[in-house]
Image 1 (cartoon, helix red, strand yellow):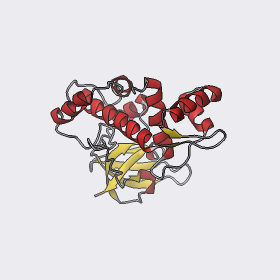
Image 2 (image 1 turned 90 degrees about the vertical axis):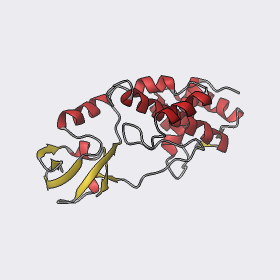
Image 3 (image 1 turned 120 degrees about the horizontal axis):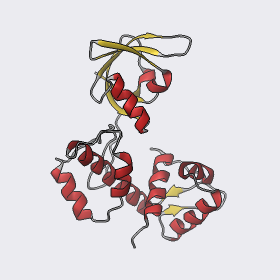
Image 4 (image 1 turned 90 degrees about the horizontal axis):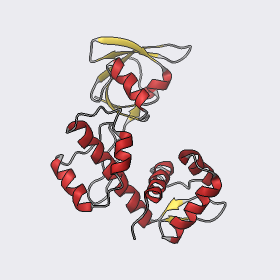
Length: 220
């Protein structure tokens, strides 16, 4: 049975909110994430439960069933592959691709997705550093740090972002911070926890705590 765009989006959001430990997701959390009234969320959860895609009882949290997890991972795989295609083959910026990929992720053809994956050379990460599930649905969970966890003098590689908002990505572009950049914290302001960061051994700039909290890095 084909799932609707909205149903797939709910499954993807439940997957994201439940995290690696598969914790229960509340109706209120879903309503906030989807900008939807709680009553409408409840109606959708009943539909997903009837299809066997979620475990749901009224006034209790929601978790994905094995079937629901499979659908969510498939949507995530398509979304991230399309982002790679849009950036690498069509020249879009990493700040431009999310909304387009949101539409393309619902294309139902598995054959198209597998050919797209092969055409791109089976990429492991999307343009934002997020891991791409493989054809079997395996999703690697990289052991990244947040820049705020890094001490003064440590050199790390910029591997991804937590915030995909275009305004944030554009800010990083203007600052010269891109995937693969070598970052070294040279100073931390005790007042507001902003940090002086040396980029690729040359340019130095101050970045706010909010920016630091959204940068995923890996020790060299």
